[in-house]
Length: 219
Image (cartoon, rainbow, N blue to C red; front, side, top):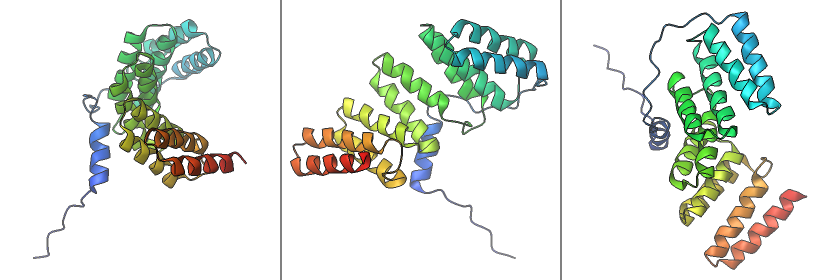
């Protein structure tokens, strides 16, 4: 008989990233009966997005809810967008508890992994405003594991620094620079935070090196 094929194994890093994405206590997206996504629902979503971009949070919430009234169980991507954006509007209205519920609902509603890192970043922003550093770090880690965006990596490094996890913060910022390079949007920020970290460690030659790197990026 032909030899059995061995199942492909994930690397330890990939396994850690997968566990991180599932570590928010969120059940996997189940096969729900979707309702049709109609032009009317799309119009309400577009209107809501416009109100949100202009900072009219109350009207944004009204139109996101109207989209859900038209299509109570929209396709997974639209469901993710609506609940995440409802959370963002509620955050700006000062309804932080409801905002957190909606971000988590967005993550529950989407396939795993979610289509964007926005809900994780919004959770991190909320927890940062609440001065809850551990959940902030957890949310930023999930966002980085999903998209590896350098601005989020920089914020994760800064959050780890705030939690006095200096070695992990240093490694995180170096990882961001190694992965994205000095042309990335947050490279200057990463070099600046590394300078702060090395000053805490009293590694003055490294501080000077980071200052030079930051100035080079500026040029």
